[in-house]
Amino acid sequence: MELSNVRVVTEGLAFPEGPVAMSDGSVILVELAGARVSRVAPNGAKSVVAEVGGGPNGAAIGPDGALYVCNNGGLFQRGAGSIQRVDIDTGAFTTLYTESGDKPLVAPNDLVFDETGAFWFTDFGGGTIHYAQPDGSAIVTAITGPQSPNGVGLSPDGRTLYWAQTHTRQVFRRRLSAPGELVASAGYGVGALIRNGAMDPDMLMVGLPGARELDSLAVDSAGNVCVGTLIESGITVVSPSGEEQLLTLPAELADAIVTNICFGGPDLRTAFITCSQHGRLVACDWPRPGLKLAFNR
Image (cartoon, rainbow, N blue to C red):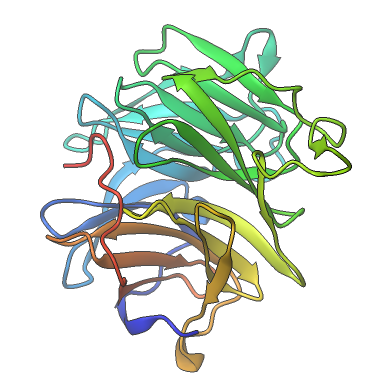
């Protein structure tokens, strides 16, 4: 099925990721290959917010109105990853985390804030998922073992954590008993995912066929997990019960590296999508409102 009313917002971006729709109609995003954070105005004009270095990969607005960035450290810099805080108004940035416990962050990828102001983030290179405070005071490694964890999100009620795995083409979830608190399970891995001889549906939401590798994600107001999809590309929409559908770009805007999606507009029914092969930000109509994020402004 094809996405509806797709239009190009801007072009010429250096591997865009991490879009954040702002209340003034602009979209802030990272340019991974440009090592910067940029703002795209509604008319497509681009401006630089901050030159953060490394490889900025994912972004979200935190409780203080600042932009928090997952930085993978840049190509060939394994183990140089970090979490950065960027002042949107001045471009000043600081580094909050470079390690969790005694282990360095390898390639942080995507993050999402919960209602308390703390955030979950994935480390694609480290095979871990972390929970951290926005003031740099505390970080824990909450989940170990995922293969290439990429996009991360929370359900509308905040009680389920979702993540996508790029190379295994799977979307997983873990239930939360409270913010930052995982419901006890057998852990992560093949043994933990088997229940009564079959894959545990309470953890594995979907595994995709073919070459539909998964990137970053957003959740809409109906609780659907909407994942940027590579190679056989588009947006894969996974319902809370695990049904999936691939929504594709029109042929003239085809892009093999559809990396991310966010929701904006006055009714949150505009989806902004980063198309990183051709350096585009596109917009389209979404059939329902997106999920309002905790601290977007």
